[in-house]
Image (tube, rainbow, N blue to C red; front, side, top):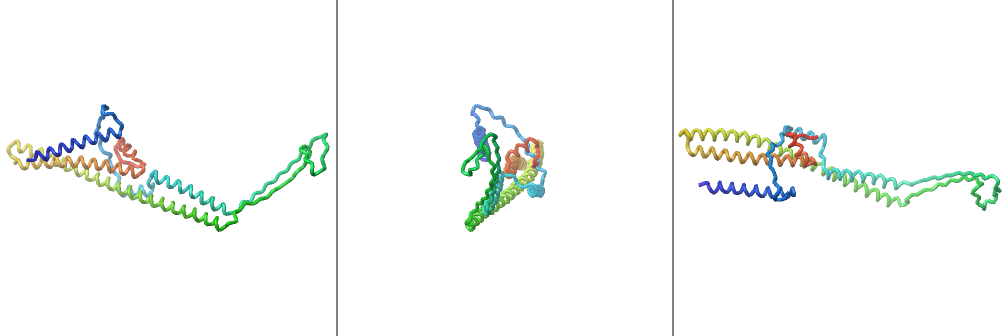
Length: 262
């Protein structure tokens, strides 16, 4: 009576595996003839609790490319504000120079209208000032740049808060999925023991068919839940890595076998 349900689960699993293979090859740019070896990896161990992660965020903050870009833009705009303020003030410059030359056996020219490049003594100075006298217009320019800078700073802080909350939420989901994965494995172990006992009793003629079928059902249901929770746990860890600004952190956690933050 359960043939349809069993076949449906089986065929759905086959189709999902096929689709996953197609997507993986497309992402890797692999040829259809190229063999892809799949290796089973244990998920990284997560020992830090949510309070510890929130403390880490408060101390180090989040590192994100978008946030870094806004911070760089804020620094550039702050320099523009300083330059615009400086341009409101008058620029005074002074230049001075002196020169003396003597050429023997040449007639000294005493006529002030005759230029002599060989016998002369010269001394001069010049003072100048450059200032935009339209103080009102330059003041408006400064105010405009200051408002633009303040808006960018507020936008940067809003993004920082958003990224911090998202990182905390993603870590909370990862911690929750870690706990549920542990519970699923504990239940799977218990259901496996129940199934083994039910099979032994049935073979000895002590068990009932219904109890044996219930044990099989519980075992395979928990096996499916364990697989699902392991997937959810791994996906939530990739969300944590992405929220911290570097998806590559997840691959580092796989290599080391534990979740850690620099």
